[in-house]
Image (cartoon, rainbow, N blue to C red; front, side):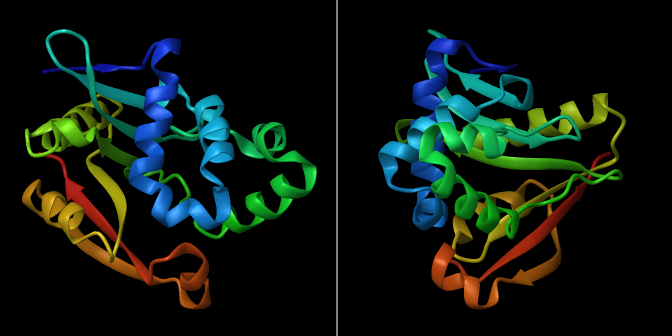
Length: 193
């Protein structure tokens, strides 16, 4: 397995599909329907904020996104949303998504999503992507990395705990849980040695 920054234009569709498979349950009521969400995500993907795992023949196994002051893995903004959803659809979607927005952190490198192809799960891809993110953070001068995990994803939380993350806080969603489909998100931090 090889992990490298960025991705090719030809991989955009596959990455958008994997992203939606991983996060569609959480974002579906806001970014759906699936057809429009895939169109938006595919266009909004930023290769400068991605690390991709591939097997020996170049098949995409998984992606890890991160967020900086310059952007994030999915950086479509209102303009990108307009092209997928139209003016009215973009406005209400963008407004709701700002409620989930996680600000960049000057002290910690922010992980903005990890997702693995179904056929590659259980093969250590997620762990390798986390370690690649840790290395990226070190190269950028960070001493900690941070992520958010929803309470309804205990498998992901268990992986993060095995990789050295500890819970640092919990943010309940309140009434918005009915819209996004999860009750709370836990902030997890890992100190880099």
